[in-house]
Structures are given as structure tokens and as C-alpha cells.
Image (cartoon, rainbow, N blue to C red; front, side, top):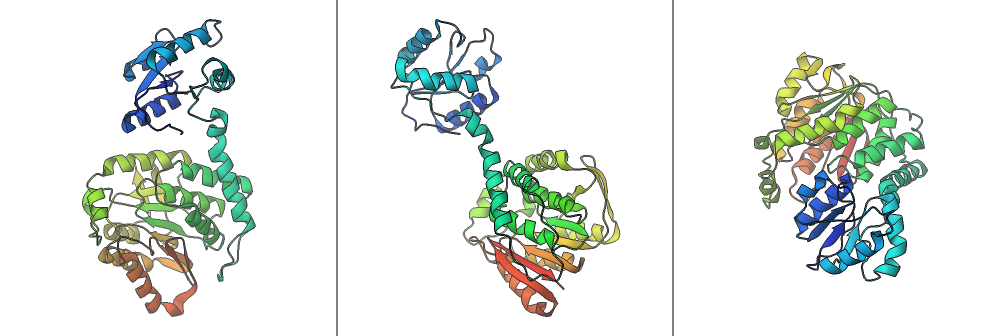
Length: 365
């Protein structure tokens, strides 16, 4: 979303009640940018949300242009933001004539709205053209279609999280070389990588996805070497993160994904003795008890990562994958130390090992 640098002069938001107008208003208020809301609706409920307000005729009214010019002069408007497709098209033409020094501060709403879909399509095309050649002992499955991969990238992009496109591409490739079994993720946060894994599980008929996360701040303390992560942790609302996780995954769940709100070691005990998980959000999900893909992305302290790998790796089946996220991590070396130890201790059990982005990928033979 475009915004001009704050000059102390207000941005006119018109029509001010559209969802993207409200989103832009909140961004301006956070950045200290003065705004003036405006609408042609006589009783626009959005008016109460704006620090300043002015009415304008409908854009189809012959008086609109003169009213807009007068409003710009009266409030010394620096620019205009409009997410309305027709209003943007009209103002893009007439502002050059009636108010040449007052620009539109956003690009075409049509292009902005579909830009994410275009980006997802480019990513899927890139992945299909440059697929990884993995020395895996599991035969490669045919790739998902461009549409399926584009959908995966697009929907993942709207979920908060640190799972970047390079890692998503790697996950797509290992899913093609995956045996059947459960997918278990340690540390799901908002659900970005959980969505990717659960969607890949369905595309490649792997199995059901179990997300493990205590969603409690006390389990996030990582004793990182500079203290930056632990300082940030104090600002986190874990209950809110869980709610976002549920909202992110619920539209895509069909009995194939669920979660345990438990510390990793406690969840491993549950998984070892009970192959069903029930939550009010997702109902009951059955698991087979053997792991095809284990994604370790919980607390990054050495002890926590070591415990995660020790208690969960024994459930990984032959041909299964273990992913240690943030193997390359600027705030500490916990994941890397654990990854290196696992490599040294299990070198004769591994058929494929590689690092993509910041994650270490290992496949058992």
C-alpha cells in the first residue's frame, strides 16, 4: 500500500468507508500522517473513525470537480488516496487538469488487488522451471499443477510468518519425495508453514498434519546471545497468535489438520500413546503414529531444539524428512549445533541432506 512521506499536510481519503480506506487510515495514523476523510454518503458510519471529515458530492455530480478543488485548497491537501476502481480511474484523468499539484498517492486499485496473484503465479512458474534435483531414495511424484502451486503461494502470503518463498519451494520439492505418514510441526505460531505443509500433504497424499505449540510466552524465552529475540518476546500476545493460527488454517481444514497446545516434550508423550487429537476449532483428527515430515521450528535455544529432535525423531519413518528451521540463524547457534550433532550421529541413516535458505533438510533412508 503506497504512502507519501509525511509533510504535515493531510492526505484526502475518498471514499473513506471502504475496507482498504480504513486500512490506509490506520497506517497513516500509526505513521503520524495527517488525514482527511471524505465520502458522498450522507451518513457514512466511517466518519467517527477519522480525526477530520468533509463531505463531497457523488463523483457523477457535475458539482464534484469544483467541490474537490475547493476542498483541496481549504485543507492544503498533499495527495489523494482512493481504493475505489472507478474513482481512481476518473481522478487519474482529471486531477492533471483541475489540481495538477495534488497527486493520487496509490497506484491502480485493480493492479494492487491482483498483484499478489501475479506474484504467486510467477513463483509457481519459477518452481516448475527450476525444480530441485534431490538425491532421494523415494521416487519423485509428479508435480502439482501451476494453478495448485500458485494457489499455495498466494494463500501462504497472506498468513503472517517467517516462512519465505525459498523455503516454501523446498517444502514443495521434498513433499514430492515423501512417504506417507503424519506431518508434525513443532512451533507453528501464526500458521504460515503449517498451512503450506497441510496443503502439500493433501496435494501429494502424504497424511494428516499435527501442529505443536504451547502458545505461551514463557516457552518463547530463548536466551539469544544479543537478547533481541527475548526482548521482542515480551511484546507478544500468544493467545492472539493462536487465534490467528486458527483463522488461517480453519478454511482449509477438512479433518486433516489439528493442534496440541502443549510444550513439545509433553505433546510427544501424547503422540506416542494417543493417535487422535481433538480441539473445539478443528474437531477430531486421526494420526497414524509415524511421521513422514517433521518440521522443527520451536524455541531455538540449544536445549529446546535438542529436546525437540530427540523426542520426535524416533517417530520419523524410513524415508521420512526432518527439517531443522533456522539452521542459519543470526541470533544464536542452537538449531545449527543440534543439526550438526544429528548429522554426525546419524550419517549412516541419511540419504539426502541439504540447506535451503536458512533450513536444514535431512531424509532418513
